[in-house]
Length: 128
Image 1 (tube, helix red, strand yellow):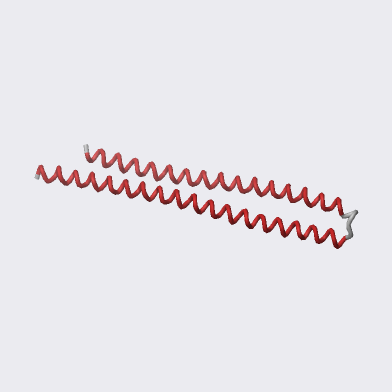
Image 2: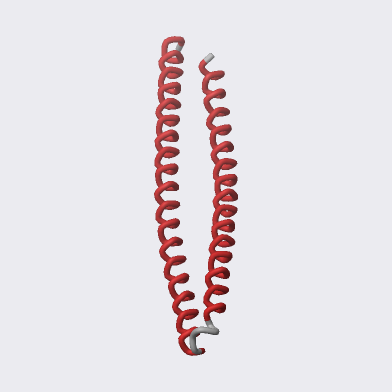
């Protein structure tokens, strides 16, 4: 029975590891899709803002319009940099939390395995 329990525990651990890998892969793919959608939305917003600026060129001199476009590009780059930095920090925090949880599960599984081995040894000692 203990060997069966040990094997079941091992199989469960392998299944959990496989599930974790699948989860990580799916999560990465989802996050990539979300980033792509955000980039597309930002690009649309940027293009709309650029168009509004171009429509005002007739009212402004060429130099003033170029300054506004340059400013919009710079602001967009700064906002994108801040967004990416925030995303990276969030992603790091989430991955760290997930890693810590998985480490705790692994430690618990190791402790459970040690307990099973100890119990097996106790049973073995009784019969020898």
